[in-house]
Amino acid sequence: MSLQLGLFPDADPSTHAAPVLPAPTHERIRRLADALPPGLRLGTSSWSFPGWAGIVYDRAVSERTLAKAGLSAYVRHPLLRTVGIDRTYYRPVSEEILSAYAEDVPEDFRFLVKADRRLTSPTDPDAPGRRTANPDFLDPGYAVREVVEPAVAGLGAKLGPLLFQFSPGPAEHFGGPRAFADRLARFLRALPDGPLYAVELRTADLMTDRYAAALEASGAAHGYTVHPAMPPLERQTALLIPHYQPALIVRWMLGSGLGYETARQRYDPFDRLVDEDAATRHAVALTVLDALIAEREAFVIANNKAEGSAPLTLQFLADHIVTWRGDPPGEAPE
Image (cartoon, rainbow, N blue to C red):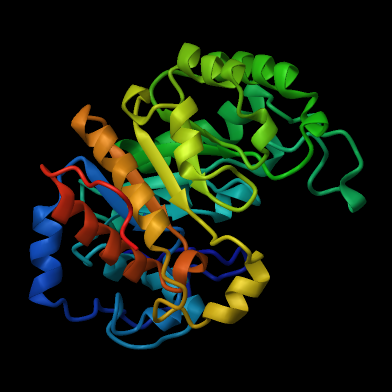
């Protein structure tokens, strides 16, 4: 097992971490995983949550220990075949760190990598007050040098979607819907071929026909997100039909009516489902089935702040998908 520099930039990669083992797996979970279509990859936003003891990990250990040594146990959970690397959103990560991640996962595992926020923020995210124009906003040169090349070199075939997440803000902050779509199109066309690129919006007004055309012209995927800042999944799929996407990327991030900090306090330590959302589960399952019927690879990432515990959210979602395969569901259950 390689030592992993996890979500903590100041973690010492030379520090010995005690082995972390997977939690015992119930036979029902193994059967459920075996019944899922191979093109579907379920995973969580990251892996370093002590509250997952008994669900993903064999015992409770510190967040820092899991960040450095938990990935090799995470990947042994039968349902978890992808994971998000969120730390790359805050600063670039070296090829060496990504290579260490890749060493700890099987050949069929894939990482969803979030691109540096400097590429997706019109104002400098590191400047006081964020009022300074950001020279790296949608700069393909910066993207290739700091994001694409390290991800490709470090993760190789284990690189899944490379996600550009645009934070919430008024459309005018991005130059307006038309200018944003045109600039995004130029940016995506300038990126090297090979990786699967995806775009996730957090400003509903930017999700226009012109935006959809920009993605289609470049072969990039829309990142469907369940988040209060965006329209419901059904409205996103009406404009951007899943079976026409190059691949399906869904991130179930946050339930309606809660902010991230409120959800974190309500759900911590993320060891149970607190606010089950059957309607969203239904919508995500339908979206997945639509993509799988068209033989598209599908990535579904769940966050702890969606219902309370990301691995359990995925378990219930998998149960829905397996139940509905070959028998398309009707209305959402009450």
